[in-house]
Length: 151
Length: 142
Image 1 (cartoon, rainbow over the protein chains, first blue to last red):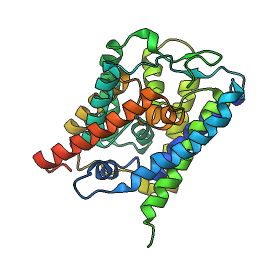
Image 2: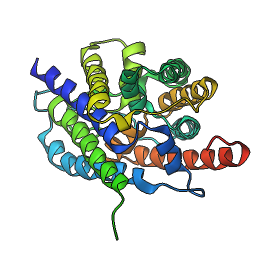
Image 3: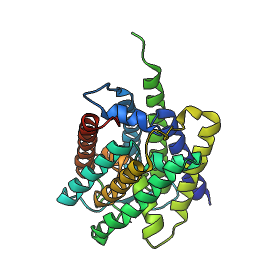
Image 4: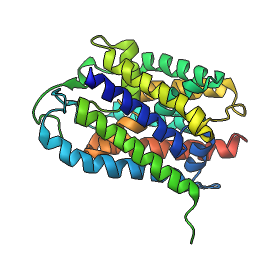
């Protein structure tokens, strides 16, 4: 039960972080991606701040081997840089540039009851059907113990 | 020199996001990869409770924002529904094909020094820059 409480709270914190940072505002995201135009660098600090905390935290979390509640770390198995990864990241980046919305802000913004967000999330979910069909089932993140796959 | 307020909010928000991602790994052993969690709810078997509880947290967080930080609420009225649908479709296909999005690769993968995530993050950032560059010249969208 406590594991669910922490999962819920981390989701909540994640969403509040997205909102405070400016990531839920597409015009802000597009301003960040508009390098040669009227560039707004502020969102670089979002990833900077997140990586600073999470990067340091991982140094401490990794040696524990298991989560606080005893679950094995669920990490991706694949270590390979392949065409699928690059093609997928390219399509995602294009979509991010077109709409200024990525999945976290999209789901968070469902709480704002805007029809545009519902359209985005519906299209995203349909797109996932296509994307999932084009990936092997074995590359899913699965729970496992030990160091295999942990970088 | 005065530091723009936007930068401070961005940094604060980033720290909150990083704390949430670290907390989910520390307590639950899970990667805070939003596209993977959402896709899992719809297209994977197994225990859905953790995924649903996390998304519930996101939604309640969104509701909190409407009261505590209404500046977070986007104005999507300038963007047509067709544009949002096209963007969503590309994001959906791309995040599954590429196994992650800004959160899974950018925040979680980079923190673990994953080479895959580094390549993915560099790629989607470059694609995003290029897309906005091209659209800015072809349309009045940007």
